[in-house]
Amino acid sequence: VLHDAIMECAPLLQSPLKLKWPNDLLVGGAKIAGILIESERMGEKLTVVIGIGVNCRHHPIGTAYPATDLASAGADISAESLFAALSGTTVERLREWHHGAGFAAIRADWIARAAGIGGDMRVRLPDRELLGRGEALDEHGRLLLRLPDGSVQAIAAGEVFPLAVAPAGKSTTGPYG
Image 1 (cartoon, rainbow, N blue to C red):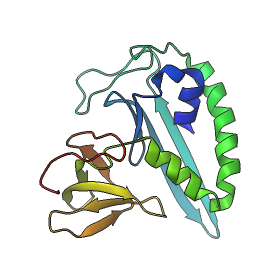
Image 2: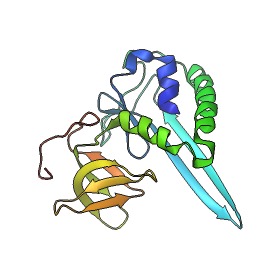
Image 3: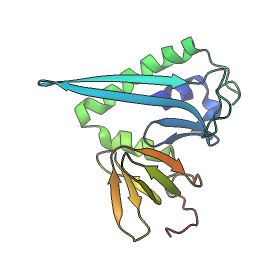
Image 4: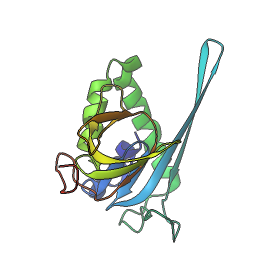
């Protein structure tokens, strides 16, 4: 939905704007936005809180991962304008989602906009780090990581650091193929 909203406000960013699994947006390989999702089950009910942070006109300097902002990328969009677009794109994607029945289309859109799929990456999990090649997203939205031994591990949550960002569907050279 956030990618959709930025495209609505700044179509000139279509080529450099990519999704980094599981929850970041990149422009030219630099982080422009992040999404945090927290959930808690209370009895039979699941409560979910979603936080979205977008660097509209400023960005942090000296971060471990390069950062940028919309204005620096050539799209001077106010937070208010982006929020208005986000409201509309959220309604559209929820309609498409239809309680999970539309996930295949959402997954296909995500893959078409992905950074790092086909490239080598490091995945930091709570108990270990893995190196491998990002292969795809499975039908549940998990990252499929091909490990050096050829096995594939489905990752449901973790921090991903592309070693070399590859366009969707393209492969980079490295120890995983």
